[in-house]
Length: 319
Image 1 (cartoon, rainbow, N blue to C red):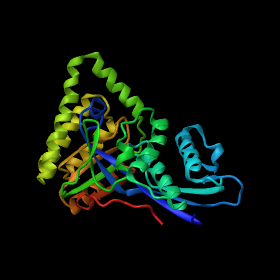
Image 2: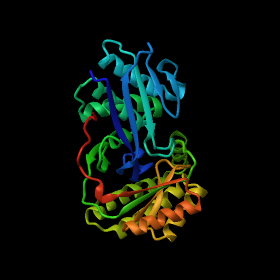
Image 3: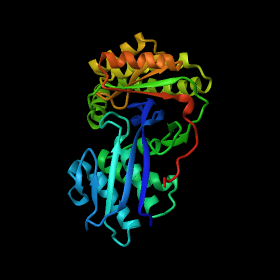
Image 4: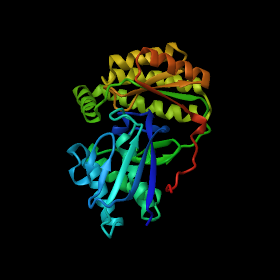
C-alpha cells in the first residue's frame, strides 16, 4: 500500500452518431486528452474517508444525491481493495465541464478507480476499469450505452458498432476544435424528446438510418484522409440533428461562426439541447482561427485537439 497515488482520465466527444447510437446505429467517439481529471488518494488520520473537489468537500458518507454514483463506486472500491478500512482522503481536480456531453462523470469515476488501484498496488486491466466505471455510470445515467466508460479510458478513437466497442485507429490528420456553449444539456431529456419525435411519425426513423449511414461514410473518409468529405458529413449530420429537435439557437450560431471562420464542417456533439460543438480544421493555424472566432462570439471555453496525436497507446496506472 502506497502513502499516496494518483489516477488520471480525460474527456471524450462523439464525432458522429449521437442519438442514432441509441437505435443500434454506429458511432465514432474521440478522446479529448486536453480536458482531464486527476484523482489523488492518500491515507488520512481524520478517522473518516473524505473527498475534496469543486463539486463537494466533506465526508464521503455525506455526498449529495447528485453524486450517488460516486458514492456507490467508492463503497465498492473500499469493499474490494481497502480490507483494513484505512480512512482515505480523495482530492479530485477536473477541467471537464459538467453536462456538456464530454463524459465528465465517467472520467471522474475512471480517475478515482485508477487512483485506488494504484494506491493499493493492485493490477488494473482495461476490462476491470470499464467494469468499475460502469458502476457509477449506471447510477448516474440509468441505462448508458457504455460509450463514455470506454472512451475516457483509452487514448484512441472508438467505433461503437453492432453494440460492440472496436478500437478505431486510422492515421488521422487535421484538428478538432471543441467549443462550449456554456449551457448544460440533459441527456435523458434529449433522448426522450427524440424518441417521442420518432414515435409521432415512423417515417422520421429515416433520419436515424441516415445518421448511421453517415457514420459508415466517415469510417472510410477518415481512413482515406479525406478531411473535406469528413467535414461535409459533419455538416449534413448537424442538419439531421437539427431536424430531430436537439439543436439550439446557441449551437446553430456557433456552428455558423465555425464554418465562416474556415471549418471544413461543424456540428453539435453529445445529446444536444446545450453542451458543445465540434469543428473540423485542416491545420493548426485554421484551428486557432476557428477557436478565436468562437471565443469572440461567446463560447465559454475551447479546446484544440490534434487528430494526429490520437494513437493506440494505452495509459497505465499512475504512480
